[in-house]
Image (cartoon, rainbow, N blue to C red; front, top):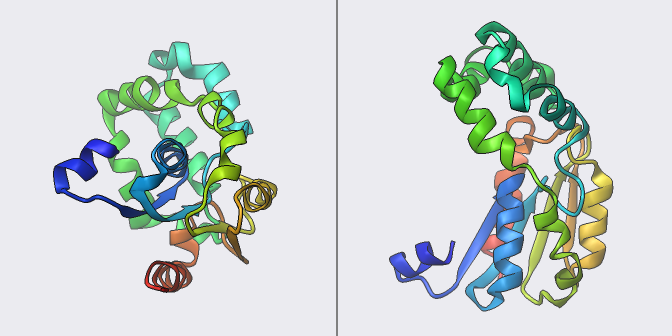
Length: 197
C-alpha cells in the first residue's frame, strides 16, 4: 500500500477498507500510522474472525481438490456464499449476482479463486496486530451490518473497544456487503466521516 502512496506522491491518506481490505488497511495503519489521516473499516475481518465458519468448511472440503468440482457445483457454492452477504436476499440476485460471479467464470476463474484467494485466508495476520490496535491515534470509524453472517457484530464491538476513540456505527437490516444492503447510508457515513474536520 505504501508504494502506491509513494507512486502518487501522497504523504498521508484517508483509507476505507472492507472485509480483507479492512485487514490490509489495519495492518498498514499499525505499521505506518504516520501515513494515515483517517481510517474507516467496514465489516472487516479481524482477530480470529476469518475464515468464517462456512469458508472453513469449503477450505476443508475443496481447497486441495477443487479441480474435482464441476463448474455448476462451484457456481452453486458461490451463489450460496454470496447470498449470505446480504440481509435482503433479493439484493443478491439477477444482474447484481451475475456481476459478482463474472470474474469466477470457467475453470480459470475457479482455479484462481481457490489458489489466489481462498488459499490465503489466514487469521494470523490480524491476530498478530491485536496488541498494536491500542496505539492508533488517528480518527477511526467502524461501520458494520447488524446482520453480518460472516463477521458477527461482536467483532465490531471488540474493535471499537480496542482502538482508542473509535466511533462504531451499526446499520440495521444490513449484512456483510453493507454497500449492497444500505448504499445510501454508507455514502452518508463515508461523507460525514471523511469530510468532517
